[in-house]
Image 1 (cartoon, one colour):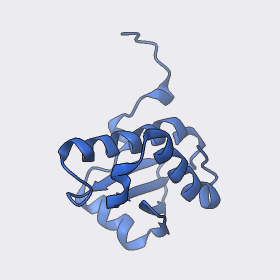
Image 2 (image 1 turned 135 degrees about the horizontal axis):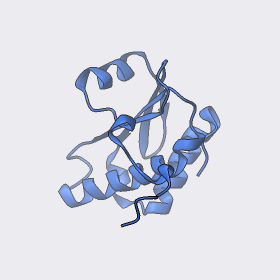
Image 3 (image 1 turned 30 degrees about the horizontal axis):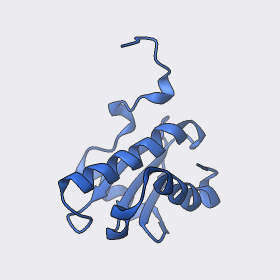
Image 4 (image 1 turned 90 degrees about the vertical axis):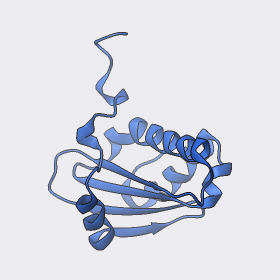
Length: 122
């Protein structure tokens, strides 16, 4: 593997929401953006990097389906992280309809939802 991989292609721990308290803060104080397939909660705070949290329940499907949906969302974040404002805390909640989306359709839906509000486009 190449050790000189571009930084925008990685998904380091610093760019993830991992603690329950982080998720609760974004749910409580963040702005909700509704879509057909996803609900996004966005909170701008003082951190220097955008961060992503995922919520994909069993209503979406079995483990294989849920993991595929999460991979698609992470890929959208990896490709668009450099366009997001610093300090953007993003939690994406997948609805059951997300199971039927392809990778490109998932990216287009998230880009449409976040592009109008935060300048993120896919």
